[in-house]
Image (cartoon, rainbow, N blue to C red):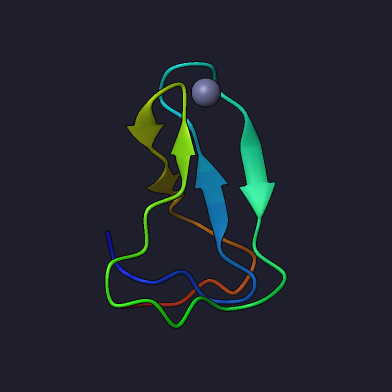
Length: 51
Ligand SMILES: [Zn+2]
């Protein structure tokens, strides 16, 4: 999983909980676990980045 950035939204595919990142992660391998699985970065975050 890529390091999360401020403003990223994370979603758990198991339970559907959503989190917003308020401080970026500097880890090379960032894994935020929910329900025993790494959370996914949600598309269409508030920034609307095209890439
Ligand atoms: Zn979960």
